[in-house]
Length: 112
Image 1: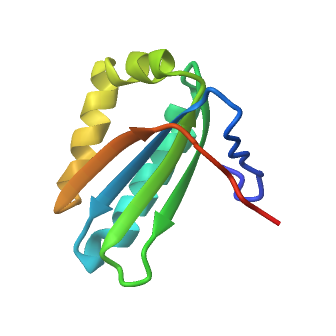
Image 2: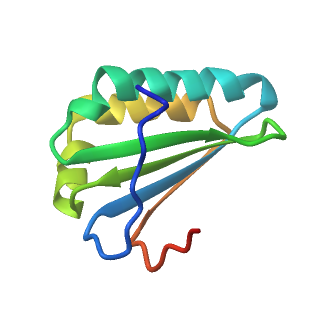
Image 3: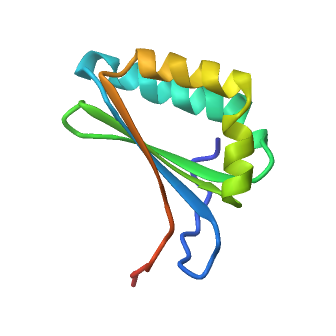
């Protein structure tokens, strides 16, 4: 993925936002962030309805967060129903102590 790409967060959009928080042992943080990035680059970004994802690593080494945008809940649900998606999610969960995914809508964006 090109880290220079600008991601738009817009409260007027009907996009679906997934925020997934992985709690990890510090020694697994870099490996999980890399595994997520590689899966996104090779397969996830090519799925229908995929818009963007940002991977974040906490400074204390204990969390990895992915912030993903999908065109709609239907697109996201279609992606989640695929067996290969479930296999990838199990791989990611194996590197984490816990996983807490949630779906969101953007209510407001405040920027300069």
